[in-house]
Figure 1 (cartoon, rainbow, N blue to C red):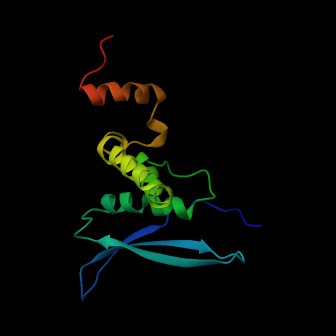
Figure 2 (figure 1 turned 90 degrees about the vertical axis):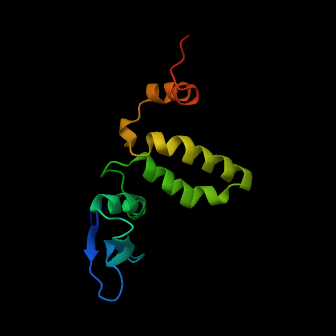
Figure 3 (figure 1 turned 180 degrees about the vertical axis):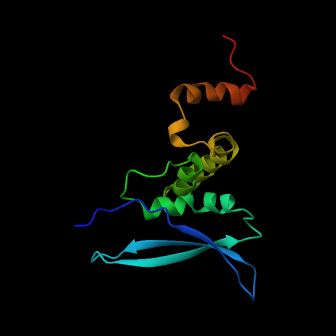
Length: 141
């Protein structure tokens, strides 16, 4: 039995003569028989994501799916976790729940916590967060 390793994948810029240049993410997938094979997916055009860093932010949720059963590896951002939730969990909820969760995520969570890594988010900061964001200043009590 082979040890499964965390896949970072490979992000490359592909030149295209016919249309725009685009970003391509390449990784390995394992079949049910245990055999590995290469996969690739187009991330977006260079016009959409001008820098490699921008494209890496987009592939972070995909990288989470590829490494679903692997616990250790690259740190995960709150934005990647939210993207996975919106893609997989939110569609199964009632319409009213989808609306309220989407509103809270887009208005409060992502702007403030989206770029933070999960390991950087501390309980004290989260407890103080509603008072700071809702009232503009910390509670003076």
